[in-house]
Image 1: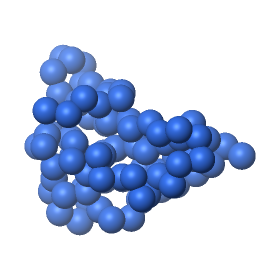
Image 2: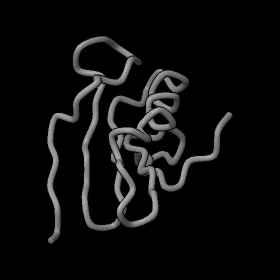
Image 3: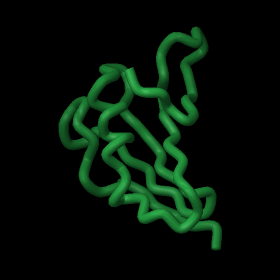
Amino acid sequence: PDRMDFAIFDKSGQKPLIVIETKPLGTKLQANSFQLARYIAQLPDLHFGIMTDGCSFLLFGDLEAPNCMDREPFFAFSLD
């Protein structure tokens, strides 16, 4: 229903495996992760998502409950 910025699909091209949500440089990523949480909730086969501003990256999953994005990223890194 929502338009994703980027998605990585399985070999068939039918199922998104990872969604990448991009924001402008300097954006507080965790505070804006609601859109990524919506994607994970709407797509039963989607279990991972990435929030990035091109420099900082937050990797989220639904590791605690299926189709419910965890509040905290399971991995984060920055290129600076």
